[in-house]
Length: 218
Image 1 (cartoon, rainbow, N blue to C red):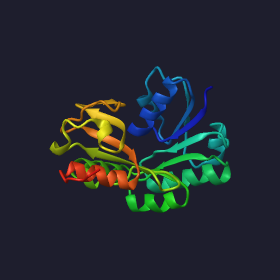
Image 2: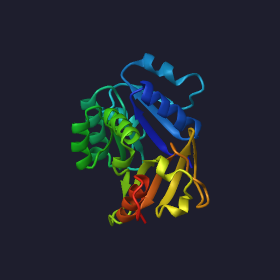
Image 3: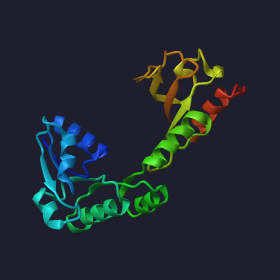
């Protein structure tokens, strides 16, 4: 069933998201202050376009906003995106709202206020650290009970040739030579593989000990 998606900002991010959602058969409305920006959508775009500012309540009503809508504020301005997100949530009750925030410090503040954010700089920095410091990468996800975490690890020489099920941690995803797959326990790890582990803190610590070549890692 098609869902109502409202994308505010038709730059590179907004147009890419809008075209993808449109190709999936969803009801997509794109809002931008500049009519020329809609050219990025191409001739195949089947959704609607509205010219104006995304925090204009009448314009949002014209876009069909409701509590069931998904609103993405991805303009080039942090202040505008936050205002759009707040209007969508507070005035129209939309629960699925995402705001693009380029300042990671501000993004963290609004996350605590319940507004989901996409901080480009923060995301890129995190990915860099995960690549260069794979054994000290940040937790990607943690369950509400804090028992299980999802972390990314790069396979060291010490773990090369080890079966996935011998590491003591569940490998939810394996990325090898740019190709992602869900591995079964018999797969042999190769140096340079990236694995996403879903495990307890103790299991992750044991995995890291094995990766460092420490005996008794299990």
